[in-house]
Length: 164
Image (cartoon, rainbow, N blue to C red; front, side, top):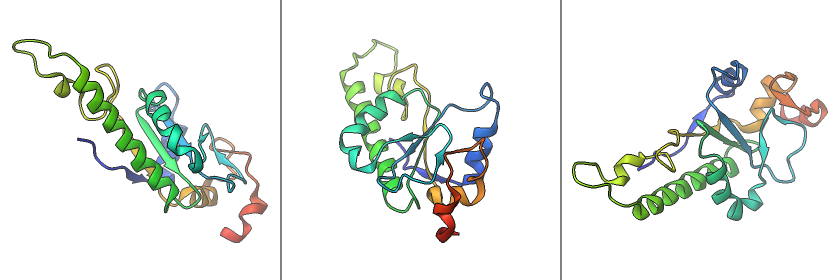
């Protein structure tokens, strides 16, 4: 029903973020670092610690339903970021199935409501959503874009000296 999340490079994400708001897709960036959420963050990202995902994922699915893209990341995007992205996709599919099971059949000659929903929308007016994992996480992001104030906020380069 829904494809698993794929990876997006820092270069590709930065290109999206630098497009004029009127022409770029609507993007949500979810930073799931925990107590390692220091040294900066991607501009406009939302911090949702991985330790809170059990109760935050359903909320995220609802609040981000109109976004074209949702990008998850942690420090390296090896465990927490990919896990969060997969959990988000699973919950989104679960809510889609529940919503489509509850929808009435429209009548003769009309496709059943499951087909009308599409694989990635929560209601018939929602957009098709792509879910990504930031390749290399914030560690790779900060190597290239840490000092770029258009893309990174609260950057503290001294924290990242050992990661370069």
